[in-house]
Image 1 (cartoon, rainbow, N blue to C red):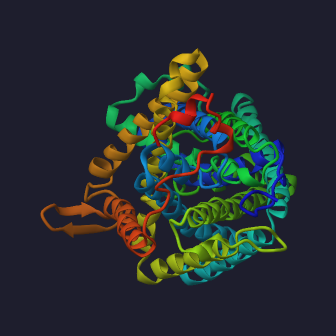
Image 2 (image 1 turned 180 degrees about the horizontal axis):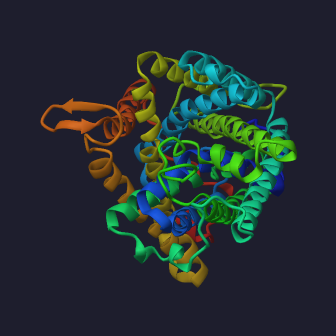
Image 3 (image 1 turned 60 degrees about the vertical axis):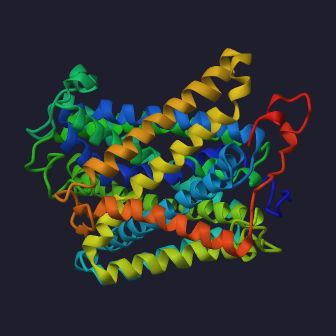
Length: 507
């Protein structure tokens, strides 16, 4: 049993990598995002997908370094509190919670739609209320799995992930074989080196928008670190899993984006990736054209729909895991009510933290569905701000925490200082550019809000920043009720020695 009562040693490296990869939902992320990346940057989408990997890798090194000295399941909350104080820590934890709650609405919606499509019930898939009902059932089922135990969650993730990745590779290889065997549609293109040249992109604005979208498809690998207290060799395994996950994602995304663009082209007609009818789900039309609809090809096409469904479902499950553990850690440090610190005596999982994540996600999804489909859509688009906020904060926390030992070795300087700080700076730029330029444009998204002193502002920006500001209010309320938390944090055992340079690092 771990020091907080969680089930220690339940996960190995393979299970941790599987959870990290499954959290990003590769099939779902590509289906929902690739078309919009192509719309932003055209033929240079493969290089933009690769560039989106850069800040993710840098922040993965920050997670690896911080986890090595403090393997706490609160991750950004705990580490930011140690580096910058309790207020920064609380906001880092809130960034994780709010981003995960918002994205759960989208995951549930996709799971509901694809579930109906899989059985041929297209009319139900297009019905907002039936889709919402199916989505709520998905959230309920995944919450139950997370409640019962981390080992069951990991086993399910491994099997679903293997099938998902295998099918994506088969899809990509088949598509490229048809392109070069002259069996592809007329819109198809041969792979060109110019696709991997970022200087071919028309403007810095287009490049930034593309990278913002690419960053989203990598989000989720940090779940491998969020379950660190339930992992064998918790000081090393979670950090290694985070870095391995990001590298594997790079390979998967580069292969699929290149093959999809080569086979379908970037036309706004037919199966072209910029066709508005396909942009929200490029794998659906792309898969049917590659595999066909008859015989074994038809089976593979249906299997691809199933993979997108299970990808969204798996990500639903692995979105609950880190959020429950963040709120659990916050409660153990008295930053949230103590009820969230309870552990199930048999399953050794956070009880109320897990159940609360499921219930809040259901109410959020159902509430926005009832209010407006447009508000739901813009809420989902705003999740990138929460991602950039807490990932970037982790990068800065790492560089600051280790600042006194950065000159001790080249490894310290680069992996604990320069790269995490660069990752933080990149994400800070993306956050500011998106919040105050791209998303704030009244023409962006589907809702417009007239703010006092500001005027008409895009709903995506208002929702994203507003969600973070709600965290400030809740933090002040909790502080008034609880008093101080994390005011004098305990130094982790791994850094408590007087000979250890971190023991004197300012918190």
